Image (tube, rainbow, N blue to C red):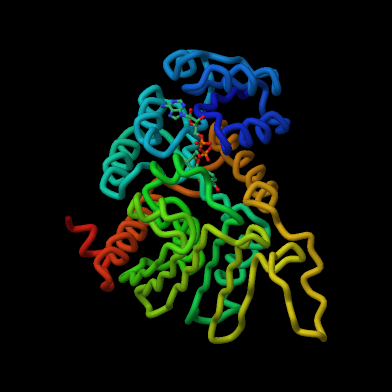
Length: 335
Ligand SMILES: NC(=O)c1ccc[n+]([C@@H]2O[C@H](COP(=O)([O-])OP(=O)(O)OC[C@H]3O[C@@H](n4cnc5c(N)ncnc54)[C@H](O)[C@@H]3O)[C@@H](O)[C@H]2O)c1
């Protein structure tokens, strides 16, 4: 019998509740959010138990907790669950800043309670196959890894206001993937970006289009491209170039590009609409793996330590964009 609590039932929280309610390994769900009307609606849809506070959820006898509330609440909610000894899945990022992430990670490490962080690309079949190809040596040493994320349209501006910016909110997925794929630590980050859509991005000190070059310890280059406006669909691709071979992930029939090569009909579509349809199976695999963690049958596939390293990358990219200079990870970490 495994019962999970879900805290935060917005876009992704409602989606995770939907996914969890379809898992055979789950026997019950307890849900809460700051918005009572949302709690009632999600509970009714999935036969979950609604509660009116985080305290009530943590005291309800759940075996584990999914934190899918807005980013500024992640650290406090995760620590509250961990304090009670409850295995926790926290959506990315683990905290609003890298320094706070590092502090939260220390408390979690001391507690010994397992915490998994929500970088779901690791659980996508194609991305996982790319990782295996790197690990089995068939690509040879990697010289370049390219990771792209383009949303069809930006989330609401209230979300952008609390998101921490495109690097901490969106490109963190790319940073996680290029770290995970290369198995290397990043040394230096050079980022740039621009506002070409809603001018409100600039009011929040954010950009809607960004590019980042990450230099890893062996010299492998990571090239990240992120954009909030890509009307053709949700574009998420990974290209891994080694001295011996290259593999790509995300170049499936739904990749939202119009190939104008007359001799090639690929891709045949329909284009991926958003991250939810693109990563439905990955989210399922990710949450299934978390249930195994709750049961004590597995270790988290994406750790808090991983999330802290990703947070330093996002911090360095944010600073590089602001200062218009390359920023070393050592430099941001030492502050
Ligand atoms: N892994 C992914 O691909 C992915 C995709 C989308 C969002 N996310 C992450 O998930 C989180 C939520 O994003 P979203 O798009 O669902 O946002 P959202 O704004 O749609 O929903 C956030 C929800 O959290 C609730 N909330 C805020 N503080 C709370 C608290 N202290 N206690 C209980 N409920 C609280 C809000 O009422 C709201 O319903 C963000 O941190 C985001 O980074 C991850």
